[in-house]
Amino acid sequence: MPKIKTDSATYFKIGAGSATLQASGAWLIDARRKSIPKPLQSEAFPTKAKAKARLLELQKEYPKNTVEKNLEYFSKDELDASRIALEETYKENGNRPTLHSLVKLGIEAKAKKDISDLFTYMIEDVKEYEKLRRTARGNKRGSRPITPNQRQKENKILEEFYKYSYEEKSASGKVTIKSFSELKTNEFFDPDLEIRKKTEDFIWARRQEDGSEYSTSILNKTAKVLIKFFDYLKEEYSKITESNPLKGLDGKFNIESRPVAPIIPPKKVRQLFEVATTDEKWIRLIPYMTFLFFSGRRPQELADPNNVKRRMQWKSMNNWEVPSSQSGGLIYDIPAWEENDKGETFKLGKKSLDATGDLLPSGVKWLKWYFIEIEGRTKLPNDGEIHFNRNDWEELRDNVNLFGDGIWDSDSPRHGAASAVHRLYPEHKIHWLTAMGHSETTFLRNYNNPKLTEEKARELLQGILPPPLQKRYDNKMKKLKEKNKKTTKLTKKSRKP
Image (cartoon, rainbow, N blue to C red; front, side, top):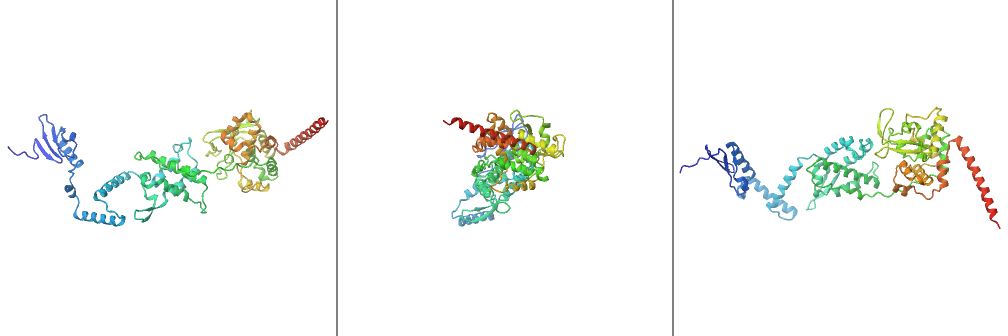
């Protein structure tokens, strides 16, 4: 029988097997290597070239699996170096690993490295995240980008985070210093890194510029920023299948209940307004004070001391034409985002949605007196913004002993107004919850103050008026008290036997 050529017109042998030309014109491969799955051992291909390519692919995918053959891939020097490495590992760790276990670990490490090549270092992801947070898509709590101030705080936290250094101890006790900046993004999700514990250590270790510790509230916010960032990483990388390792970490930094801001006594508030009318620079603060004490507006929504752009705009008064059926004052807008006369857009309201406020009648009287009597206008303003000067405001409060820790709380005016309206108008509770921008839970916790009697609430909201009206009000109250005294005396006389 003649010898079959290894590469002829009807037969060839290459790679993982051979192929024979069939009567149909197809080439049938025969790859009977044990490591090759049976369905792949015999396949037909339309051309000789495709049959050859397939046998070469099978050879690459399913090499002969024998130790002797595999050792041919390694030189004697490489094998000697492997034996030396085994001995060094034994001396360092105190146990002699098998070559098989090391090869297995090496293959796993190689697989991890191959995956890591698909990822960038953390600093690159921080940069991309910063870009995203500049857009509306990057703010899941609203329809506009987050404020520059908020971005600046987030960026500071993330920069400190990826530069954070930590200690890593080997089985022999050797300690090395490593940094998050050396890690690829996927490595932060590797359970072996114990990123949750390291992140907690990072948060506790944060310090202010003067070296002092941050408050628990700031630590809680730090944890939330990092949790949100890790959520972003999971969304960006489909290859990360592990859950967010930082989820719930903010619970480790419980915020201590802030003591309720004290309510400033009506007499002290009255004194503050009276002194303000005696100085040209202080009197310009009257509109700001009016909204603080007679509408319960948040101070930062009127004039943020740390952001000169964030100011209430007079156009939010709606031409001063929307009356409040509940208070007798005026309804005004509190937009989440505002635009000033210069065309600059900025975050104004604390909430993400637009809201409305209620300016009480006393407040309306103060504004009419200021703009018409003091500034000499013929009508109330519909453009421009509210005036505020931090130094003047602190100087004025200092003049009436309302300055300093434990004496003044920026929330005190709001707490006073909110507590007073709930005391005087309990039948309109839903309206005031909305106008003050707080929930019923917040009302019960902060504003349901039993020490604020109905008489004091009335004095706070109705008894502090501009100079021309104050005298009339005081005379009216004086006559009412005298009348009540006479009535009380007559009642006592009539009760005598």
